[in-house]
Length: 396
Ligand SMILES: *Cc1c(COP(=O)(O)O)cnc(C)c1O
Image 1 (cartoon, rainbow, N blue to C red):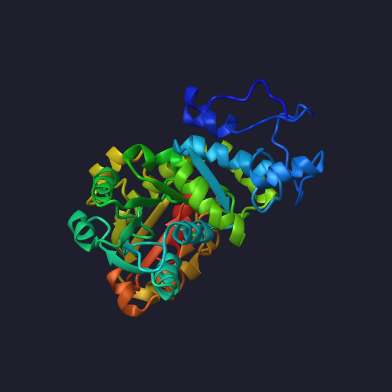
Image 2: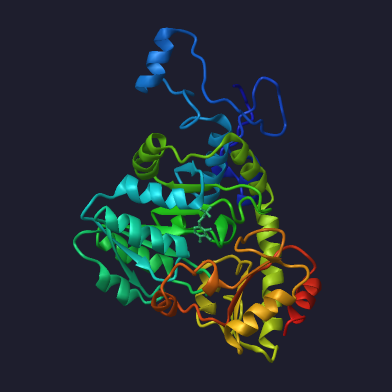
């Protein structure tokens, strides 16, 4: 490949990085990035094959761990997160799994926010637990609780901010300080904000997790994930596990995500604007007990959200007065919004977390996580905001 116009991302704003970073044109001179659907690569000679396999010579070997389309996606996302390195994975869950298995061993300990994606809780408790890696769950916003839960064996602190689905926040910079004072790595699942709205590495986080399935794709098509961080941690330890165990990203999916990154900034700001309008409207509705959205003045961490994020995101949750019955009624009365657990789509989606995304948790775990039976989560899409309000008002 030859491309005299490959950009140096540091010289450009995030919107420009999203469109240009990582692209290396082939001799065909294509303007849009190509897809490389090939499982392996040929070498000029036996000696070159040996040099590639031994790592003496950089270059492609086999698409489980080297693919040009995937590499372009990785470089672009790393540039947007301000990370040295990024590795792409088959899903968000495989990004979390690869991070934990790549970095931890039996006897190590994780301190995690209690308010994380339901499947991540199951991964930590049932599967890492089985391997001798224990997890202590704490209240996301309570810095003292994090500090007190850290033991000599603790290696990772894990969180999402804002959390799913209650949009709680933690001060990332303050927690990074606690992590580093205790020789722990701070892992932030940045799925809800994306680098457009929040850049945790600049705030001191060590590792960023993404489910690319959500806003990075942005149109609900492909499964994928990513881990960003330093070359040592991500490029060696996490990648070492990934290339061996194999939950890596396909070239086609990487291409879809690359194209998603190009419009990510426009979409995140549009999702955020509509979500704020919807949240303000929901606060006025008689059947609504409480609205959770960091952009509302009533959100207990509104100030922190303004300071830590460049926008408030597309997820709005609200509690209905009538519990599960009213919740299901509202969902079933909609004619347009999609009843599905996915989020980060152009299409607005509606979910009843207690019986879907958080249904595998025990009633006690759900109660601790604040997932009540009357809670509804809306991932606000890009339809006209009045059409979204009208659709939700049918069952109110
Ligand atoms: C969806 C999601 C995941 C898991 O990602 P998949 O791509 O579905 O495996 C992890 N974290 C958060 C915050 C999510 O919303």
